[in-house]
Image (tube, rainbow, N blue to C red; front, side, top):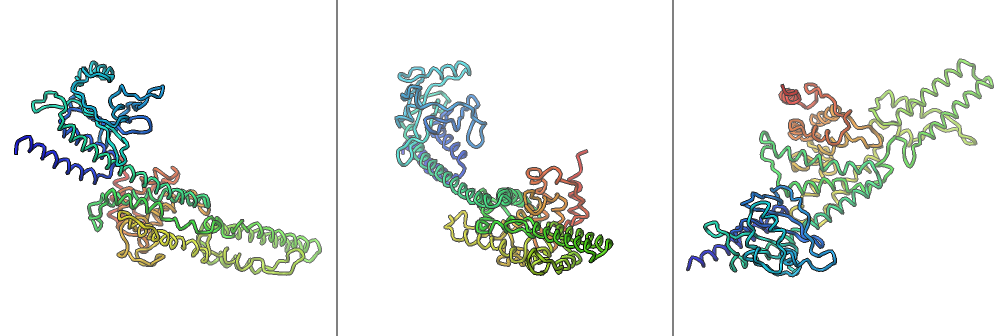
Length: 541
C-alpha cells in the first residue's frame, strides 16, 4: 500500500470517527464548532468559516484563522458581530458574485486555487481585508451542506490549504471529496440536532401553555411554576458540586439537568383540575366571594336590636354600652379569625364557638344560630384558610400530576420526570402524600424538588392568603421541617452551606425579605454549620 493510499485510508477512518462523534454531540454550538475544525483538519486549512442558512441570509456561526488568531463563534469562541450575508441582491436577483452565496444557492462546491486570479466572483472585500490585516487569502474551498432532502442548510468555507512545509497550496481533489463527505454527514447531523431542538422548544412551549392555563385560572400559581424549577436547579447543581458527606457521589449531567428542569416545570400540572375558588381561597370564609360581609351584616342586626332594646327600655344605658362593646369585640374576633394568617389557639377557637351560638333573627325570618355549621368549621381552621375537605382537594393535584405524567410516552432521557415531579409532597419519614414514600424510596432529585417547593412557597409574595416571609422566618420553618423528618437533612445543609437560599433570594425576593440570620438559634443547624455560616457571612478583612 502506497503512502498516498495509507493517508486516504487514515482520512476515511477519521471521517467515520468524526461522524460518530458528531452524532453524539447534543450541544448545537459545540456541534458547529466541531464540524468546522474537522473540515480544517482534513484539508490542512489555515482558516475557515461555517455559515447557516437563515431565511434569505447566511449567518456567521463559527470563524477560525490560525495565522490571524481568530477564534470566534461556536461554543468557546468570542461572539461574532458580523452582519449576515444576503443570498439575494436588492432587486431580488441571486447574489452569485459572492462565493458562499453562490454555493448556497446552487448547491455546488466551489474550489478556487487563487482568489486574486479567479473570474466570475467579487473578491474586492477579500482584497480589502487582506490589505488591512496583511493577510493573503489565496485558496478557497466552499462546500454547501445539504440535509437528507437536498436542501442547503449551511456552507463550509475553508481558506488557504497548506502543505507539509506550511506553504499555501490549492485544495486538492482528495481534500474536496473528504470535505464534501464530511459536509454531507455534518448536514444530516446538524439537521437532526435542529429538529431535536425544535421539538424540545415545542415541548417546552406546550408546558408553558399548560402553566399559562393554570395561571389564567389563578395568578397565584403562575410564578410558582416558574420559580420552583429555578430553585430546584440551583440546589441540584449545589448538591452535584458537593464532594463531602452522604451526597458526595451525586452527579448531574446536562441530560440530568434537562430532565429535572422539565419535571420542575410540570410539577404542578395537576392543578389544572383544581377548582379556582379553592386555589385562590384568601380568607377562611371565601368561596366565590368573602362571606365575612354577610357576617358583618348580622352584627349590624344585633347592634340594631340592642339599640331598639335600649330605646324601648328593655335594657338600661349601661347594659346597652356593654352589649355594644361585646358585639364590636366579637366582630373584630371574627374578622381576625377570617384572615387565617396566624396559628389559632384553643382560646380563640372557643371565642368563635361562643359567637356561633349567638341567636339572631333575620328580617322576616326565624331565630337561628349566628354562624352556620359551615361558617363555624371554616372560621375555626387552626392554620391557613383551607378546611380538611379543601386541603384534600388541593392535595389531589399531585395525584393528578402523577396520573397525567405517567400517561405520557416519555423518551428514555425523560423517564424520571413523573417520579421527580410527583414526589415533592412526600416526606422523609413516610408521612407525606400521595404515596407515603420514605427518604430511601425517593431519588435525590425528587428530594431536591421537595425543598425547592417548600422554600418557594414560604418566601412567595404573590399568595392570596399571606405575605412573603423573610429569609430568617423561612429558614426557621425549613429547619423545623428538617428536625421533624419532613425534608432531607443532607440537602438542607447543602442548601445553607452552598448559599443556595441567598442566590435565590437575591434573584426573586424583595430587599426587605433578606434579613439578618441568627445562625446559632436556627433550628436544624448544627453548631459546626452555624460557625461556618457566620464565618461565610463575615465581610472580608
